[in-house]
Image 1 (cartoon, rainbow, N blue to C red):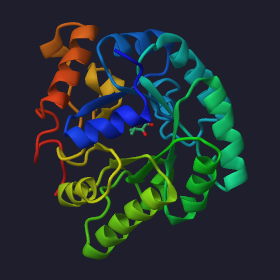
Image 2 (cartoon, rainbow, N blue to C red; image 1 turned 120 degrees about the vertical axis):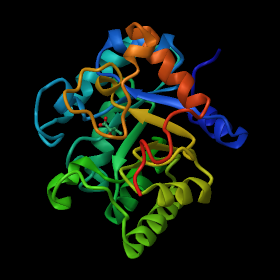
Image 3 (cartoon, rainbow, N blue to C red; image 1 turned 90 degrees about the vertical axis):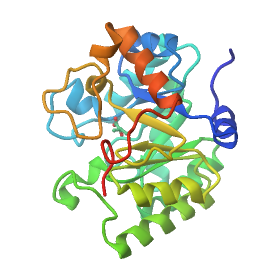
Length: 264
Ligand code: KIV
């Protein structure tokens, strides 16, 4: 099996085949995920909570992201490595370009940006420079204070229409994947069906092409895991078994379950 690229993800979408994504922050977990067939490893700024013990992702720096991306890149062989731009790394196109360059040099294959309309020129600049972008929209954790907490987005008709339109504009700007977090299932399903690029969901919809979870939530390490997550350790019996069970459940459309891991 060859390395997973943005083309592989696009082919999976065209073929109607789902793919699995999980976070990792170090070489050992990256190797584990890679060996169990996870297609996309996300070096998420959730490391601020999972690894560093912060309340939010805001304290995570570019140096932190570079350090963990390099560690993950040393552990993975086949998976596509996606790295987060940290808080304010997307404040303007020049800053985003410099920070994304550092992450790509550390071993990332794709950069994930938490997006509003302001980030459209940022996406265009990175794509122009040859950097593949995944646009993260909906519940964007770096905006936790603006949202007044980790709240499901797109619940009223106007907000849903704005989010749907933003997804289209980001795709037009060149984003090669979208990541939808914490939006209603109906909205997530509409976005997943509308465009042409692969859509990864978390607390979104089974209709998404890929699913992502934070690794700590999958292996029972999070004290109060979010409702959209599922602990696969009991059924998997080991760390490798848990990751394998997650990959199987995503590919076969058994995770997420509509109404259980989604929002109305
Ligand atoms: O940082 C992260 O792990 C993420 C996922 C929750 C999608 O952005």
